Image (cartoon, rainbow, N blue to C red; front, top):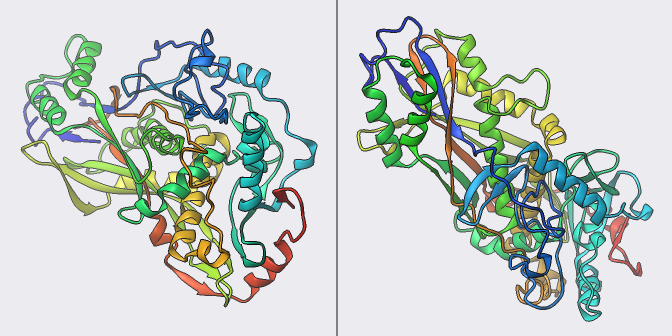
Length: 492
């Protein structure tokens, strides 16, 4: 977000008004974008597709092998990406239509998956065998496989050299559809993981070592310069406030979406972008907070007109925090210890060329809102599943980094051949998000304009997997968890 104070390049622009208006220009999309739904659009928040031609889905990544992964070809977390890469906000009606379609397409999960359990285990070798069996029989990948037996978080990674296997263990339960069409646990309401995100995490682990996994949504330098030029000639809000707001939006133009570390066309990338987008809309009061007692940043600004804001751009981003990873003495048992998702902030500044610099300072109100976002994140992850999905993909990224960094496939003498083969088991290829329209809103506050927003999501998966301590207790959990002669690919 960009603050224009009266003493900067808009020095005399607003002197005629007694109370300057605060503009929030954030990422958003028009509500009148309507696209029909496709029966295969079954993942979180999907509202795009075409019910008249579900057989011609070019985004499914099928490549003729009839795997038919149940992956969104449109929106995730209530957002949509059109054919031109433009990010749009899904309407309530579209989300409701999707939820109804999913109820018809997805039955309830098997009772065998049961209520929430702390440690559900998944054998990657046996998971591969189950996938191969579906392919050999020409059948689509089943819901139990795609939703990884209802796995929701990953706490342990075990190496089983005796059976040439790697086992993932964490909380899980049976799943259902919530009112908005999200696939969540029947007891906890937390979103469940999916096979597609696992494939992307494993295949992207080496690339993520070069700079982590991240996304950001930022105004362009040209757009910021146009906005600055327009605002500098304003004399108050004018007789037509809506026209002024529209002109500000148009002067900034589309904001750029950048994704690094994972394929931009992946569902994994959609989760990052959707979580970032939703965070910004909460901050700028475009969406009401789904939990009580969490004001938007704009509400904080309105309530503190003399907070001393400067000509700065508060930037928010989300990043995971993990305690050190525990391992046993043999390096065959590993425990992840996530501490949650943290909302960070920093005051950036705009130079004369419209380029953004970093000040290293944390603004007062922006920092207060970041602290609120962090404090309420667990509640938000339940109330808005996109924030829970972000935790899930972080787990997968850290697990994948750990497998590569510690050569767990070498210790297991198991290379995960099917999971690593993008031809045999292709991940979804969706429209890549590239830009999002800017949107402005107004609240009254003295002496300032708040005009833009930037930030993102940063997952330094290798760094998170780099802090390791030894704890013999982890070995005991491993011994109790290994499958031995269990036939199926998951167990409790």
